[in-house]
Length: 123
Length: 108
Image (tube, rainbow over all chains, first blue to last red):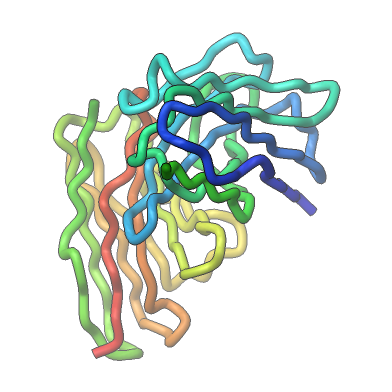
């Protein structure tokens, strides 16, 4: 059974930083690209970032480019999101998600999602 | 960036009726790389359709997807009570891999 468990969400002041983590199990982690998707309170889903199976390719939403960094450790079956220069509009539930494609393409549809970790940016 | 516009914002129907949800892209989605997700409150989103028309594993055949280029449709042929929730489309043809704003399907 595929499981994705996020952690690291906290209340942080504007301008602050934190690192989100996602522990993956139940599938061959290094065969798949991985995503972060977020949902602000009362809003829709917003795609944030994707990383290829080997970490060699990364892509970001314009709203986070230059502030967020996605990474992975295939030895630890873990995905990370380093978030810097946080703003109030970054307040959201952050989902870790598994791409359904294999190593051929960077990103396809998302077939598994975690339950999310909540980041609140407030002074 | 490809902007996806979903319509209607809210759709009011009764169980047993047919639902048609639209997703229009600001430019052509390459290879029909368009997915549909169902999202219930407090739960993780669920993949319904990928590649515009392929059902994901375990998805009932009352859900179907169609379309190409800039116009895509999710159809639910006979609504069940558990289908009343929010639906999103997402394009993965070019980065950033944007979502639509969602359509809420509510009981009439």
